[in-house]
Length: 439
Image 1: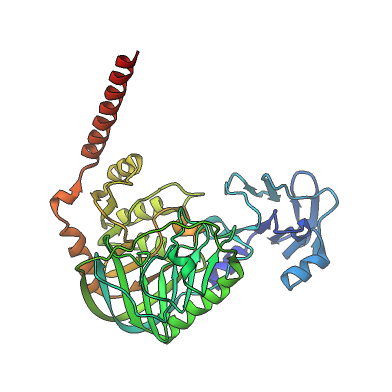
Image 2: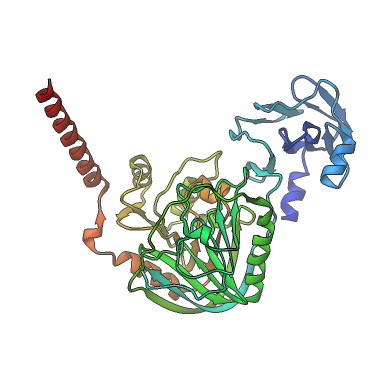
């Protein structure tokens, strides 16, 4: 990271742009580096500065109060960063927010990386990935699985019968189970900078459970159990940090009956496990692109669109270029025809499976389990968690399981859309017939 930063500072270039702060516009700033005298401009105002790394801010005193360190240059009167997007140039180096990175929103800081421009929200936390050697087991659902009372639980939604000591849930899912309102210490989380609080884990002492499911285990998904004081402590600190997003309880809820899963397969492991927290520390795209022999991606659905280059599709293509054989499993109900065609045209084997909710990736001999769906929300904008498990046998266990799905549960895209087209045509025919008889 330090080497990358030094490389970024070796040339005249923009480093960070904060055009639309939370609250007062006085917090606007631009960070940049000049290797000699240079000119910074937004097309209306301009600043001529000497060599070095600088921060130009709209209000120097407010910048220090807000961020805890000093800016050295104040914007001239004509310089004001537009909330609708505009081009900032430092000599010949230009960045157009709203175009080079199309997402515009309050609180977004655009920053330069080795591969281009990225963004973060000002209020995002900064948790690092944490690795520990653990013993545990992986359970593949459907499964008859629950926890005893007293766990601290995070979930997108929650309707399970056990009683958490504390429960953290998203404040605005499509529906709120009334079960969430029955638990005394339930915290409803809502934030502009996190589209959904989509993580699913539980902690009790040193015991950790991470899952891809919302504590209902009737679909194909994954549960990881292990003991780790370091990882448990990090997850508790994450929830403590996210308490700043606590909002009021929803006014309405939906009665929902809990469905118990049956069966389940499991495999024990002893391995290095790395916890990652999205968006703070997200190794998923690198995990995918690093595959050299095999890449399996298991996810209910996938969206290849991205805010700039270097997204999910590019990571998959890099794995193919590395020589990896790529297989992707999606749920047949949610598969996007254009996505599947693009993947197949790139040499990817795509399978459509019924009842898939889990999110798992096998890259060579490593296994990744996460709450994140394979789209921009899951990989960037949601609060998610996951683990990477360095265990070849466990990776093989997941590959063998998904490969053993009954043939009648796997269909082709063409057949799926043929059936859909037939049903649509039949519906139109019936409606037309009724209308004709009616008139």
